[in-house]
Length: 540
Image 1 (cartoon, rainbow, N blue to C red):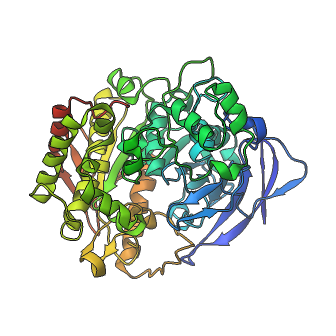
Image 2 (cartoon, helix red, strand yellow; image 1 turned 45 degrees about the vertical axis):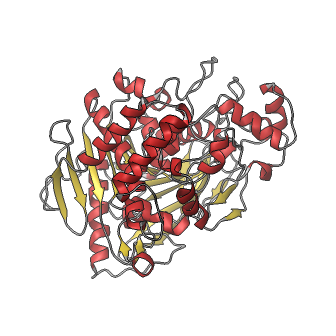
Image 3 (tube, rainbow, N blue to C red; image 1 turned 90 degrees about the horizontal axis):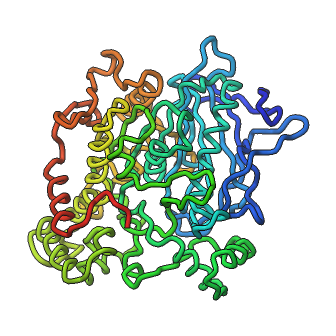
């Protein structure tokens, strides 16, 4: 056992062996970073954590937030008392403070946790960094917005800020350097990381950022009329009031399970659109200025155009076959919907803003571009569908976001594509079903973390372990030096992105630096938004 002192009191963690059996690390789990958001604190910004007497055991995770697990398709036993983080360190008293990496999990803002079920620290702590993983409030509990000062929205994002503030105050006790913090996240966690790059609340809380498979402008990260959505949810649960204060009082009183896996659609199209490539009901919002400490008061586009973003270096990118994950987690009905309703192929921004007379010809153009005909048949066209969904949902928006970031000249930015493939690609191996394999959404995480729940074998002599070490080195080097390839040890010099060369590193079994990758994809989707008369950056 090992003890450290933080602002709230003493913690007792444990020393554990690496899963690779070639070292040890110190683990501190279930550390509260904010007061439990219970009762009248539901939907509000997090309050500072309370102190404790004596020594608090930190050998097991705190409760996860109430949620519907999008992978198992079942409700998870959670608690509103869920604002906990975990710290893993190779050395609690190093001669020189260690760089810190804070991970923000994905899950569409409605699922997930920082626990080692999926995010075991073994691979990254071996790179001599301190790793922090966090929980934050999800779905309505974390992202409900009533446009009033008591519930202005973004509670889940403010949870993340509270965790980063806790890190600044306490990480030195674990051997970490608070001046060298890198935040990173995947999917909704990647978009969250991007929001912190933009948010005034997050200024000076980190030095670097890694956005994996998600940026704030992604279609699925957009909100539409959040106050109306909150009122609709209340109506579904039995409250007929339109007064946001009465709605808040009601929603703070209902059992928490009533706020999990809800479906408060506010347009007819949302009933059909309700799939993970397009639609999550509760996401970050642009807050109204009601005198509160706001996380985001302006749309990302306006902040980027004004160059009003936090001065940090960033890495961002995507996997080569993101949408292959759909064959693992999506239902058969979604494929049927795409066959029946061509407008399913049209980005959400356009669907919300334009009439059917504009939408249907655009749907035809998209289907013609990806399938060479005017109709879609999922059994015949699944490979093309994977490309369509990957391009529209991830690749286009990541390229647009880094392009705008690079113009601010507020830091160095690195663009990547991950194409690693081995037995670890549990989400992208569909050889037997459609004869297709690749690096799907989530597969890249399996080369950074040891997911205990998946019980993946580790062969230190095999190519998968080489790719683990290579991927971890790139990410850790960036956290340490602001440069993923500070020397020649990885056999490549990864040059920063600029709007002329558009350098991009392919992270596969080998590392290959390319330029002007996927520009045809970007141009096609730019054209789609242009003929629709809708900006691909603006919120709906």
